[in-house]
Length: 463
Image (tube, rainbow, N blue to C red; front, side):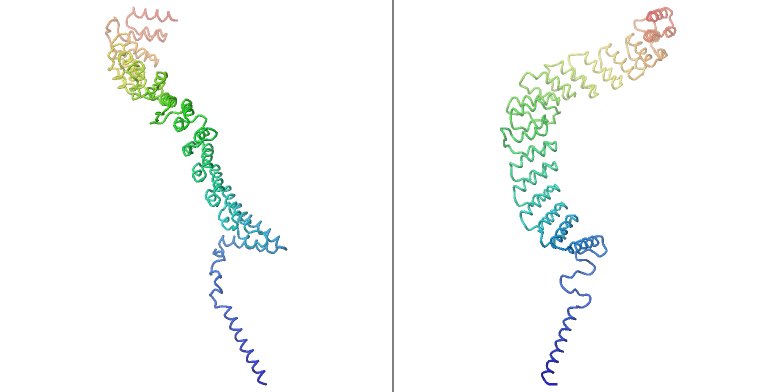
């Protein structure tokens, strides 16, 4: 063998040794990843644990992607991948597109999933802006609107979401006042709540304050509290004249124009029962206002506000307040009318079924009437014993007997000697009952024959 051949053989053997070494190095050592992109042991390419529901779903999606990639032409492959991404609401199939736009695919997936995260993948600014807007509209997402780079488009988007959710609070995020004000007006109307109207600017539109339009957009008859916030004087005054709600406490009617001030005070007086507001009127409605206010707020505290010059009205107020608040002390405030004061005590005594209240009445006849009313209300004939005069005494027993259809109650009358009448209280009670109930047998319970005959005559005379 010559030297040339020998040298060739040595070089060939050396080359084989080098190639074998490279192959062994590329195969790697068991347990070590072949390259930096290799997945960790125990997970798939997306980090899901093998066998988990997530890993199963990921594999199923990849299988569907593989099917698409087996289509005959690239156009069919891309069409299949796009439809798959939309149906699965997942952008992974979009990554394999060759002919069709990936941005459009991301747009379709974001729309299907109503998820702005897919819009973030879009590189074309115009398509991305449309994606944010479309996704925001579909999902009513203000966050998506705020990602739109164009301020006018962002404002339009936020306005749409605010209306869709009937949430005026989102309108505050709108930059342009010309769009922000209508947003407040329309969402307040949709929500049927005018609390956001105060945030509308003081600009005018067609000669009317937009803020005022907001309040009237919510209701054709705003509450008085809302009327107070109107900017146009004439509209505010008219608003108070139509307000039908009961005012809240502390309403301030101190407006510069007479019409608003008077209408506000009249509303507060007649609807809220504020007598003090009635006396603030500078027109001829004061008396009517006070009369209505007394009925609207029947309390002793309110009666104090009625001026002494209107004594009869004030006494009536105390009379009704005493009953309304069940407080006999209020009766003490009635002045210059002893009869009305006695009646006030009597109504409270009967209402509370407390005969002790009758003792506050100085007039004997009125006091006896009070005891009789309490006895009847309680169904307690023993109260009748407190009555001083003759007829009210036995009539008290007779009324209770009639109430319970029990003439035997007459026998409980203890008064054997009357002040001005010759017979006993029980005898007169039997006669009273017999005539009242047309029950002649009660006449025969009377001990005195002359009264018996009189009783029978009266009963039979009524038959």
